[in-house]
Image (tube, rainbow, N blue to C red; front, side):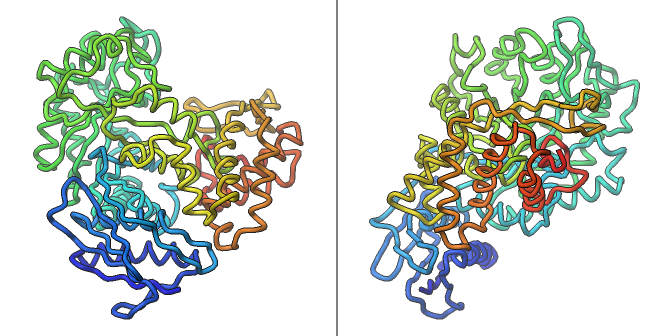
Length: 566
């Protein structure tokens, strides 16, 4: 089977990137693509239609061909992604196009993804072409914004070699997204600073006043906007960083309160309704100058975690004109539990909230260290408790081990699949090339991997010491990873063992299937070896393979590095 592609109105660069993604995935299904201008057994025509609005695409299936129409390049890429997922490929060269036409308009205008480019995780350390492939796949899933962060505290200035390396990488990531039609977004801590920030202007971080806990992740180089010259220094340091991205398509800048960040001095407390908002109009002015098209997203991350009644003090500012140039307010209400002030009063008219769901770290550490991580139940609970609240969002991603969670979130934002189980079923059908009984079994097995995800790390060597920020052990000792619920482990292992033997090698070798198979083997080994990886040679082999898949290295944080040798 050969599929030919026809371009009607897409710019050549975006069309070429779409072909790159299509060829990559069709090749794994044993489908060939025709040379440019040549005929194929089947034709896919991609047509820009300026009359379509709000990212609407239409897929019309005719005898021997499919015509996909969309308002622009990115919409057409999402339309092709839908065509790909609605078609059936058996993985051996067999192909069946979708049945019936599709006319789809996403519910939410912001369907983003956040790449955590730090600690030598996949996004920080993998070859860029691998990161580009993830961006292509997100475009196929309907993603329309990509968020990254330049963490300033590591460097004394933008002239540091490490700072220049990170800028180069982040620019490459955003530039590739821009080529696909995905606008870039930047996030930053409101008062973060360089390692060289003036000592006399630094923020306070100790527990006092209304604060009952130390703000997480404070590096003690952050700056206080209430001190004379503090705002000017914050803006000076921030300008140096932002100007490195000024020529890219940046549509949103996220203004972040904590983790790291904040100031506990009397003039700034409570930070979320004090120093944080004092700095906002100055920050907004700088953003308008450097990125004239960009809007601000104001994050409420960790409000009320360190300081009492922070949400209650912040809430009136939603409507009093304080939120200069703010397009969205970002929040993630863990498992759907909302602050009392929102439960009592709701969201004011005209204010739009987006979420920042945790899709990588919840319930299991090291994150992705044992293979695929599925959070369908967790996300389903959070979504059901906040239904109608969010107008999109930016899921937090640490790597490729939670690809299905990305798909669940993006489908929820678009309205394609509200129930995570339905999204998982579509995902399994698409990437594992199965239907009927096989689809039922594999979908069930993927969902039931979540049963055994939660596990507790126990240090068997009591002399092991931990570093101050929890990034890893100073001295490593043997550990036990006790799984809270082992009831589904044997079932999940049996299903993936069965289909690892049945499905084509091009499917089982792809990381999407492989990470589930490795996870199934890992959990079975842990169950049979007192949850202690050092007692299982197979566990060690799996850890080594996972490190290769993630491009992990010795510098990779132990919080997300498969624990080889433990």
